[in-house]
Length: 133
Image 1 (spheres, rainbow, N blue to C red):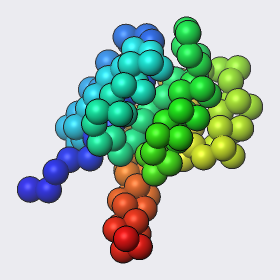
Image 2 (image 1 turned 180 degrees about the vertical axis):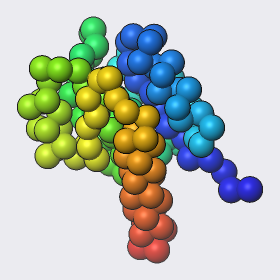
Image 3 (image 1 turned 90 degrees about the vertical axis):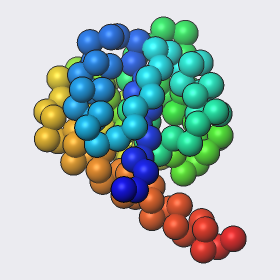
């Protein structure tokens, strides 16, 4: 059985984190972070394929977290999870390299489709990197 891809869920609120974990755990290895600093520490220590990232968090917002992740590893896919009122910011982050965004509350089938698509994109990127080295 092939290794499961690893998804890092970053959200300061336990409810959305638990919902994401419950939906994704049957298909992926899950890591969790409650803030941007913890997320960056996990990205440094683990091989992460995809980050689901809340935009509104204390201390370090989602924009700063995404930029720091992309500096550490530009091949990690980032899916923005956002609430009402931050859609323009989420769209801006897609232009800056996020693979997409979902509105809270999200639909599970849409979440699974978006995550699967992002993971496939990451796998293709990894294969291309291996071929070029």
